Amino acid sequence: MNGHTTGRGRRIVLWRHGQTEWNLEQRFQGSTDIPLTADGIAQARRAARLLGALEPAAIIASDLQRASATAAELAAVTGLGVTHYEGLRETYAGDWQGLTHTEIVALHGEQYAAWKRGEPVRRGGGELETEVADRAAPVVLGEADKLADGGTLVVVSHGGTIRTTIGRLLGLEAGNWEALGGLSNCCWSVLGEGARGWRLLEHNAGTLPEPVLGDDN
Image (cartoon, rainbow, N blue to C red):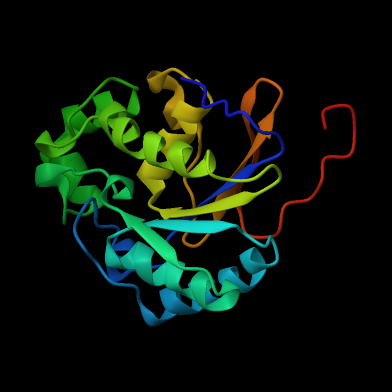
């Protein structure tokens, strides 16, 4: 599915939430509702000042508090409201949630290895990555369809959900989604609308997008 829409020049900024204690402890958060740390709030505040310069037309966010608190900082800068969607939550990962990376490898090593190979895996008995894309990508596309030509949508979500959404919007096979590297806390990726659909313009960025100067603009 390549989320081509009818206008031209629209942008989708997919912004990961700020730091949490579970991030620092390398615990798999999934759909567990973990708040931002003080540093996470500061990260969101700094990033919001940058993203506000893009003059977004709309902000949508996961309803988990680490994403909604991050989105609130951009709302404060722009004066926009935030629409929250359960469909933008992080992957539900069942028994993996709350475990550290070391514990997951020790307890679920075969399942972890299969996931890293790109096989469809219900981590901890939870959601498949394709199921996450099934719920998140339509939310993003539906909101992008409301944008005027040249408009920018900011989506505040989670690392795994953002990766699966980008993969789906770019039309990549699910087994290749892992090729999209992770997002640091409060960094973002930018999709731009081109003649053949959505293109990945920036990934894991922490500065404002720069125009492409050259033959591939």
